[in-house]
Image (tube, rainbow, N blue to C red):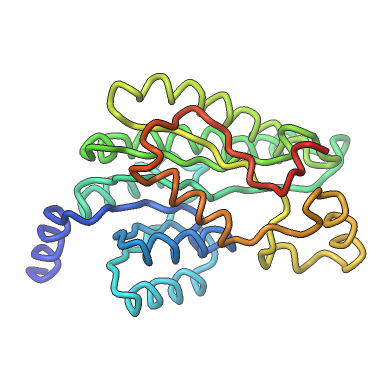
Length: 259
């Protein structure tokens, strides 16, 4: 117990930047975590379901020479968010950056959608995001240069059949980002959104070769994005080099936004 308290006091005094990465167990989240670890960040890693991935990632961070801590929360549940935010503040004292990669999606015809299904997607992707920022804000304000990086989706700009709830929720996230960029600017907190399209993660391995080939052809650069490319942009937005960028949606989608 004393050792843990001494470690917490040490983390509270650290000059190294601290980042909270949500959805760190996902394909993009893992790449983001590795990138920030290499850049010297201490990392608060959030996950919801994939315990195996998050345990492996924590071990990787340790070998990479950085301190990490793992937190679990269901973003549909306010109590989970409150508990996680309190634990992070207790462990680290402050948060310099929030990179919010966590998301949920259901692919379903609108005629088959129940109100409950639609609500789950909106609660996870939009309401949960707002609630997370609300509860992590005190820790962000303890930083001299807070950064919030949200994750939108190309489908909220160009649409996608059978993904109406996801597109609607991600569209709302863009509006949230714009408003928070204005609201939080006096606190020197920047708020931006990364807009990916099809990224080469395990989630896309389930699609057939024919489907993947068609999606690649629909992208001007004719390939899927790499998780590491998304991670590099997230890292840039959290850097001092991006201190004058706020309220922006950065399309990292191989030109898919133009099609």
